[in-house]
Structures are given as C-alpha cells and as structure tokens.
Image 1 (cartoon, helix red, strand yellow):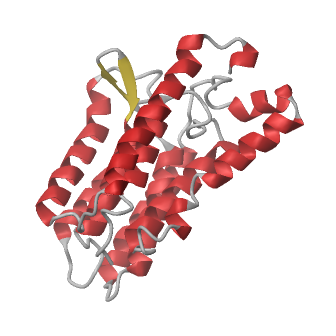
Image 2 (image 1 turned 90 degrees about the horizontal axis):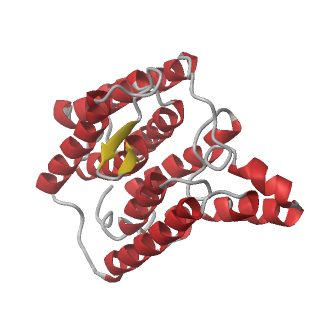
Length: 260
C-alpha cells in the first residue's frame, strides 16, 4: 500500500489492528478453556445474526448492505460475525442427531441476510462452513442436509445478484498492486495468504474438531473468492473487519475443544 501512495492512516490502521488482534488472540490461546456453553453459544449466535441484520438499518451503498457504522469505523458485518456464528452453531450441535429448529433457524437466518445484502463471498464461505459441520456431525438427519442444501442454494443465488460497487485497488485489488510492485512482492503476498488457513487444519490446539475445520473452510473460501469477483482480500487488503474476524476464529482454537 505504501509503495502505491495509499495514505498512512490506511495501511497504518491495518498494522495496528493486526498487532492488537494478535496480542488479544495470544492471551486467549494461552488459557485452557473448555467448550463453549450452550448459553454463551445462544447469545453469541443471536448477536451475530443481529449484527448482520443491523446492516439494513442504514441506507447502504447503491443498494448494497454489508456494513454497519460503529463510531469512527465501519464494520463489514459478515467478516466479523460469521466466525462467531460458526463457532456458536458448532457448540449448539446444530446439525447433530435430533431436529434442532432453533440453531438451524439461526443458520438459515444468517444465509438469508447474506443473500439480501448481497455478499456472495461471505455467503459462500458460510455455506462451506455449514456443510463442514453437517458432514462432521454424527448422527445427522435429513433436516441437517436440507438446511445445508438451502444455505448452499442461497449462496449460489447471491452470485446471481448484481453488485454495483466498484473495486478499490488497495482493498479488493491488493494482489494486483503486489504484482505491479514486482514478482517478489507477488510471491510473498500469495505465500502469506496461503499460510492463513493452516492453523485450522494442522494445529494441535483444536484437535481437528469440526468447528476448527469449519472455520478453516470459511477462511479458505474468503481467500479464494477475490479470484472470482470484487471482494476484500482478508488481512492483506485494507480493512479491520477481516483482521478482527480472523483473530476471533484463531482465538477459538482452544474454545472448540470438546465439540464434535
């Protein structure tokens, strides 16, 4: 960003946000914690769904509702809330055994809100996370597969909705800026992005729980989505929300212990 004359308050904010997020995450990972309680999971899921719904409280931008103003900053709701919702659904065992209408309804509500926004990248990433939870849940019923199918269909329909917003070079187009800076910068950027999902698939902290893998799938799709459209590049491009969402997910590696 600095090489391409992006203002210091942009790339500087990313650096500060990353350092603060890493420090908070390190504290969480250093603590030994059990699985999230059902009460905490319910509250977290309701708050996450509510934050997604809050994007419609403002006029939006050209009919697109993805952001919520919070004081001096604007929050990309999906990037922050979907890791929280994924962990909560895992803790509630939303797709295991009996038919649990409440957590399944929360999952459907999240998918519908993402379709209405529309946010194709987040909708697809969330669908991938839900499918991962369903596949890992044993036993699972037809209702779980039906909900996963509906969420996947909603994600597919979100791609068909027109997105009128133009890309910002240092947000959605950061890889192109890296390429312009030289092959070394491009290789380093791709390597950095490739490293981001690894803790969710190889870290012993989460014992490869279903929730851990679901968070990894969610993040992997978020990283790949900019190849197909104008979507923010997590952490590498400007924006505090993907940074917050990533460290929320990473900080839950220990929290997911004991989940399916």
